[in-house]
Length: 140
Image (cartoon, rainbow, N blue to C red; front, side):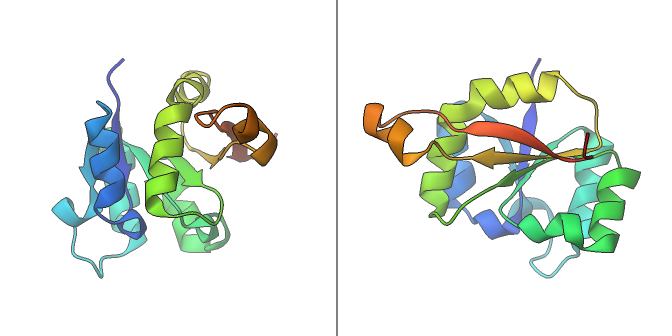
């Protein structure tokens, strides 16, 4: 199945470039929306057009109108977790892609998944260790 990942404005230009260089089909917020547009706009775009939304904004789940948009538009949303540069986050997503794909295959939107980086112990064993993906919303 061919998926299109939509990157939120908080991920800038380098993040989607790294994904595209890895062969991932990407739409970038800045190519479709004004910088000051509402999160509801791009969430609606993702849900309506079958895009996998990717953001580093972990507050979306706690902002009522944004969580409502995820639910109403049936958005599959991935939140990148951790204090890291967008370059590090992008490389982690690429390394973790098989786990992300399995996570996406196993559920129907709306949902929010958290994408974590590998632990320091895992990275000590392998510098290219993948991260993990966990369901964040809805709670089981």
